[in-house]
Image (cartoon, rainbow, N blue to C red; front, side, top):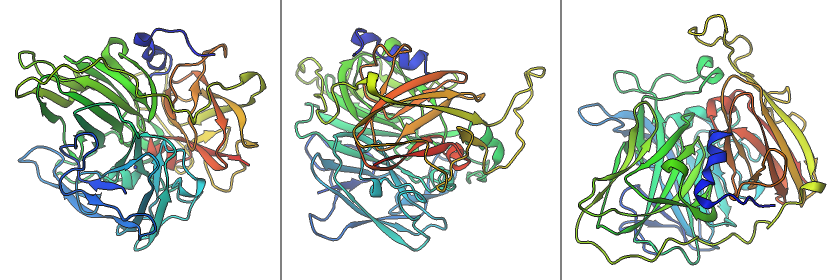
Length: 481
C-alpha cells in the first residue's frame, strides 16, 4: 500500500533512515528551451542509418579556475564537457562507442530499463570494447526521465570514470512540463595532484574505505559552481545527476523554492524537499522544477553539503521579469510501472554486504586497516562479484521480488539495481515510499527492503555505485527468465 505521508515529508525516510547516458548530442552549457535544439547540436542519424560515433579519447580540461593548469583527461569526442544525449520518448538511441583509450570500455545506461544486451556491463552483458575497438548501442528507452552514462567494465570501471568519462541521457516526455529552460547539471569529483595531473589509480586503501574521493568538483565539466542567469520568474527544470566515482553528499537549495518532479528518472507527485535538502549518492538523479527569484532577492544556489558547503550552481536573476507561471504540477505517472507490488506472494532473498577496511575501536583516530586480496575486498553473501559466480537468485518473468539488503560493513553503501525500478519498503512491509528508485544509500549496520517486479528478462546486477568498490567485488547478479 502507498505511504500516506504528506508530500513535504517524502524525502525524510530516504534521507534519515537511509542517508542517502533522432538523438541530440551537445557539449554542456546553455541548455535549450523545451522542445528546441541547442545551436550547433549534432543530430544522430535517423532510423536505419549508421549509428553516430561517440569516441572516448584523450583530452585536456580545466578542472580548477585559472591560473591552475589544464589536466589530461579522457572525454567523449575530445570535448571536456560530458555529452548530453537527448531523445524524445519513443525515439531510439543509436550510438557507436569508439574506444581510443588504453583501457577496455563499456557504457552502462544507468537507470534505463534497457534490453539486457544493451545494459553495458562489460564482462557480463557484453564483451568489453578493447582499445581500438567499437560497439553499437541501439535501444529505445521505455521511460522518459534523466539517466546517467557511466563506464562499467567488471574490474575496470573506476579509472575511466575517474579520468572523466561520463554523460547524461535525457529522455524527454511526449508532453513535457512547461518550462523556459531545461538545464543539465552533471556532478563529477576529481582527485588532482599539486601539478594538476590526476592522482594514480588502483589504490586498495581507497577501494577498501570511502572510495576515490576527489579534491575538485566540476559541473558540466567546468569548475563548480555553474552560473545560470535568467529573468525573474523564469521556470527552470534542473536535471541533477551525480556521476562521481564515490562522492556521496546531500544537496541543499538556498534561496530557492524547489519542487522534486522526478527521482531516478521516474516521475513522482511533486514535493518540496524536507529542510530544502536531498540525499545525493553516486548514480542518483533528480528532476527539479523551480522559478527564478526576483531580481531584488539574493542569488539562489544549489549547494553540496561538503564542509561548510560548496555551491554547485548559482541562479541569478537578470533582465525583466516574465509573466507569472501556473502552479508547479506533476509531470505525470509512468503507466508502464505497476500500480502495486503484491508483497504477500513475493519471492524473497536476503543479501548481506560485507568486507572493506576495519577500524580499531581502541584507537578511534587511527586510519582504517585492510588486509587481504585487493581484487576481492567486498562481498555479497560471501562472494566477491565474478561473472562465473552462480546467481544471487533466479526468478520467472513478472515475479514480485523483495530483497532484504543488510550492510555489515563500516561504511555507507550506495547500491544500484540494474534493469528495474524498485520501491523502498517501510520496515514492517506495510507500505512503501511514494517514489520509484534504482539507486539508494544504505547506512552501515542497517537493513533495507526493496520491492520490484522482475519483468525484464536477462542477467542483471545489484552493484555498488562507488566504482572502486564495484571493481573490487561489490556486485552480484540475478536472472529473470
